[in-house]
Image (cartoon, rainbow, N blue to C red; front, side, top):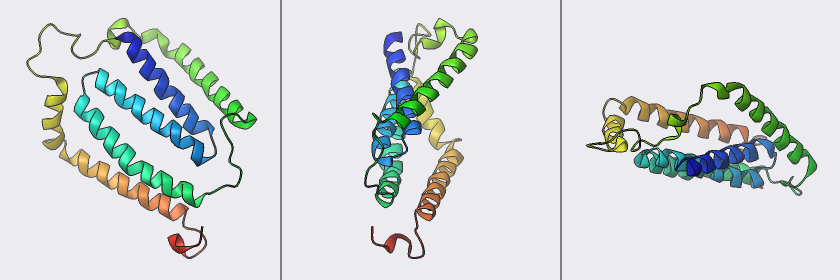
Length: 173
């Protein structure tokens, strides 16, 4: 189980590096999907399957639509690929910085943090994600409203940034 957790963590890390290092939105979209999928896999391994599914659907369904829209407006004739030298140097620099940070902060990690929710105790009456669903719609309802507001604000910001000269989304691409 810890090997699968390690694979998901490294996949999420490589996905984030692929998004951060690539200046072209066309090739960074695959890194975004990879980072989101691997992060949801980590949540599912730790026993939060409902939260993982909701995060995956909301993130990929909502944010990738905005990402695709901004990528369509920022069309490049010759985009930078993952094999080009500047993207490789950026990815290498990010990997070195993350490796140094991991080496510096690795003193407080223990093997118990790699265990899933079901491995930490002998008997569970309910799963952890079943309790989380009730908390999400009960006392955590304000967090849903806040998340909806943040998504709406990010949509407005992206649309404003990619608006163009004066005609907005009605300009010819």
